[in-house]
Length: 250
Ligand code: NDP
Ligand code: 8X3
Image (cartoon, rainbow, N blue to C red; front, side, top):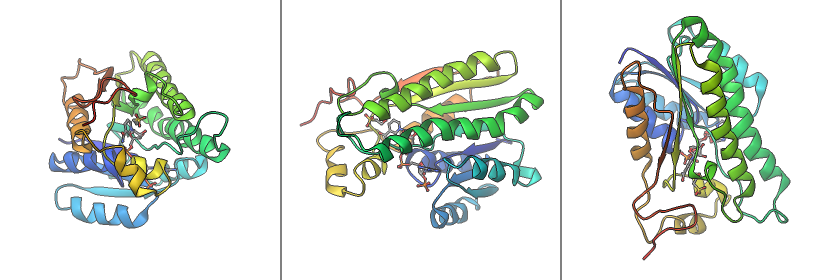
């Protein structure tokens, strides 16, 4: 596919799996994250299949986001596909016990970071009258679960932003849609529980969770629809999950 995709959070999980699949299909890639070592390894791997450019920035930092996007060389600067994927949960605490640094991180990364990246990229899509934005939401953006409070709020915000973007960009040739996964086994829980691997692993035990590759497949499906078809809002869970709190475990 002769297109350029900009993927945030490409160093791990869903973003990395999406980068792998896009590379296999010859999509030119701009891969973003904070971990320079990972970006280098992934770029070295995928450069055999496609052109890759990496950008290291913290999505919380507005100046870093804008100067990173502006620094793109010409052959990577016309973004056709934006995957707004970077994000995490930080902590799992009731609202009275919540850590304010965790709240800041979730709102700054999952909500404001997504907005900064979009603001840096969308104007050029409007100029070119084409583009495709995929916002990675969550089942946590459709319902609230105990102790999920602020993470759920951040993903509800992504749901609202996805709808708002679609309304405001209607008629400008730009597709906007959200993919909302349920439980996917990635580094997500490792980050949520601040490196407590035992606790993180337990989240995915006793049933078969989604794999990041499952979400990458769905993203690929969305970006390969005919020009008049837009996947506006898609929720996906593993067979054993019925809601955020109902998971059929052995
Ligand atoms: P991972 O922890 O595996 O990946 C998170 C990615 O986000 C990493 O590449 C990380 O890169 C990047 N990231 C985090 N913070 C920042 C930051 N401040 N600046 C720039 N990049 C950042 O988790 P997932 O792959 O699971 O998560 C990807 C998305 O999917 C998130 O939006 C998450 O909310 C969503 N999601 C995940 C689900 C799950 O069960 N796993 C379910 C539903 C939605 P680096 O650390 O290098 O900066
Ligand atoms: C990630 C899924 O259920 O851990 O968004 O919030 S969950």
